[in-house]
Length: 186
Image 1 (tube, rainbow, N blue to C red):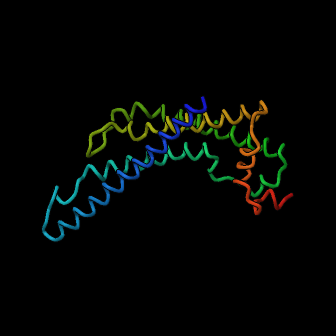
Image 2: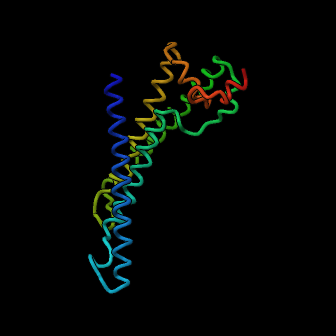
Image 3: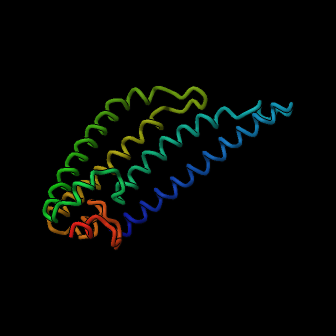
């Protein structure tokens, strides 16, 4: 199961890289086409209108899929200066409460996306004409992805299967850094 999840997240990372590369190519290409039109060489009407809209849509997808990847790596912002001062039990309690709030927020986010889905199915983007559900539908992926990660971590915490490394990462300690907060507290 872990290999399947690792493979899925590798696909997410490749997707993010592809979105970023395509966005750079489209925006840079449009900038060049516009600059060339300033010198009288007009290609593709001085720019490709679809590229602006598609790059915005890709940025939204990159951001939300990236949030799921970052959630798996425990790299979202947190108040680790406070949590680092707790012992293991306090960290587990703080992690469980934090993850419960994340699950609640993901449920609200999913519900809001669900409620708006019908509207976005019929709305179309002005240039490409694609359904706006392709933009806002990424909320389903983000809510399910981050919510599932948080639920899994709560289950691991409550069943005693949470490893020390993950607990230390929650407190802002990454690796065997002798200057880490835990080393200073101990």
